[in-house]
Image (cartoon, rainbow, N blue to C red; front, side, top):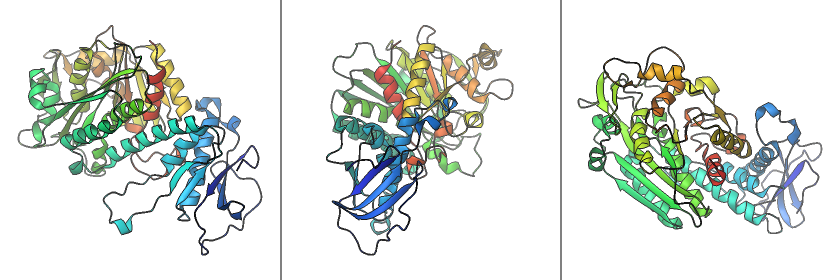
Length: 471
């Protein structure tokens, strides 16, 4: 079972053939990247899908992507989906000269969120594996772990908010981490703990809901890792109505995924533990709902963060930065090598960059260069955004309090949000903020992701970056 030529990849099926399946009448001519052609009754395998790998050199250098790896993901996805569309139950995949990328494309394509449908209405998905005689078993396993962790992040983000409350999220992560072992510890802190720590900014967001807030602290210390940790902070708003500054009703259901940063942090640590990566990582996840009620925080209220800074809450829908502020303060107490926070923070980042790339704000160019390189390899790209003093002045230049959560001026909403967060990180601690609101769901750039919906992006980029990061 090998490639027919350098532009084609072979997928096979090893289950009994069903006579009523249609035979392909188109059996000749070139196959473009992303296309798959089915052949029947060929040798050992009753059905074969051949998918085009295309020409990686056709990716423009301005795309800033590893075209060879991306084409493998596209081809693997196309082949698996073609066979799955014929209700084939088991699919074997060639290594396609990059077994990790093949596994990622195959597994991420072979996904559908349907746990709450009746069993007889659910779409059957095939079992996918590496072909027995294919090379790259170790690389395939790595890709399989990464794809599986990203699919878990997708499930966390897609689950309805009444079934993924802060309490349920915390319990789910505890259960999942218990299956991997490898030195993972999960602590679930309650509101009393947060109050004792002085997390008034975080707790102000929870004033309008009956659901109790939680603060997750996850530690993974791989064998041979440093004592000093890398800190990951993830925004965990399990539902964001906007609070008193309520959002428009259209598409508000999408805000069940406003904990995408939290899902990325949890899935990243889960993958690192499975890979037994020699890194020391701590995850900090503030979890809460943002709801309107008679007890909710009001526009104009002033709250105090863990570091003592006062914040005027001009807009209760700018709540993500409020919970991250205290999480960043707490993460800083561990004196980490560097801090990375991940959040579905602003709609402005999607206006600026669309749905194909996450925005990164960094105080350290070495870290930026490393995550930029990782994003090129994984296909989950990142783009650097500015941290000008101008934006900090808009957030901090106020007479009656230290910061305003909305700031002065118009435009640059993702930049002012990052400037706000910067006020809660020690100046000598390297820091990156990743705004993933644009790539949260229904992205149009990755055809190999399979079903539409929440994406779990850019989790694989985070894993590669953290594994290789040097400050």
